[in-house]
Length: 445
Ligand SMILES: Cc1ncc(COP(=O)(O)O)c(C=O)c1O
Image (tube, rainbow, N blue to C red; front, side, top):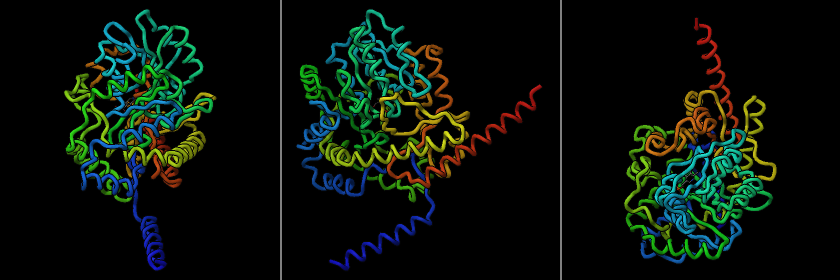
């Protein structure tokens, strides 16, 4: 027994020495799934009796509700589906209006439009990329029913002011906590402030079940309606669930920084053409509604969600420490960093940085890390404003933000050395852009 331990330790030492000298490159997400998660997930494939349905779903939902500090939680295949069910449960329908900020994700405005209601877009603030409450107030009409508060990048909205606004106009608040699992405001978990909230566990979020979403609420009547909606949703097929599990395992392996140094090429070559379920279908990107939209979460994915939820504290502590390190380094270099509200403790799923030319920064940084693209478009999807009812020029700060934002990874695989390397790349790229612009100016007549 002792010998095995010694061998394992030696093996680990050799591996960590090898890792120290081997090149690494970081993906924008990863590190939330463990090897043990993969083994558990693969066991469901070997014995698929509880692959789709089983007791882990309720266990996971209860643990999620406890995490947020509310009584009820209901899981879905995506957060967007939960949002759709929630809007229906709140009685939102044709001729109603729902206020939401941009930038956001097209699947959020889709969920609103699927109910027959109209999304009314509100600009963001540039200090923390959350909703501009003054403009939100100006856009309230007698038809406004719901105010969606998106805690962008995991930075909590100024909730005292937002809830006061909703109270004054009798609006229901839905918190979009898709980026913000574990963030707090005034010491309380986000997701526990509105009438209800949505969370996502898609692979790029704080925890990953490959795809997945949750609705939480403390309102007993609303909970009953959301539960009834959940029961009307179909379970995913066994083959679909198997693909989600395989994708979880594959991403865990291929995104490991030393492997990603090489596998990144494959990803670049194949781009979005990999043979696994995509987070957003082309149809949704165009504002359409997929045929099998209303689906639940599988038992196997719930098991993984539960395991990752149990490790959430360490995950969050790492993200917060990484975000603080970015903030300190970037401030020293003269970059603007986000300013969360005074009572907020963000959960930075990614760290947003405002740069002059995001494409150059991404190109320079890619030797070390793939930087994130939230948000490259008002609705995250290149063509979506064309298909949606967003009027260009109606949210000028958001339109400016999408031309300047890059996001830095905060996930558990980001080391202190990675932070240094990434910041050096951002600084180098910015200097290059400045010199390029100076030369350009010099050539202007
Ligand atoms: C702000 C925001 N809200 C909601 C969603 C939808 O989450 P899901 O993909 O789980 O439906 C996304 C997707 O990334 C998002 O960025």
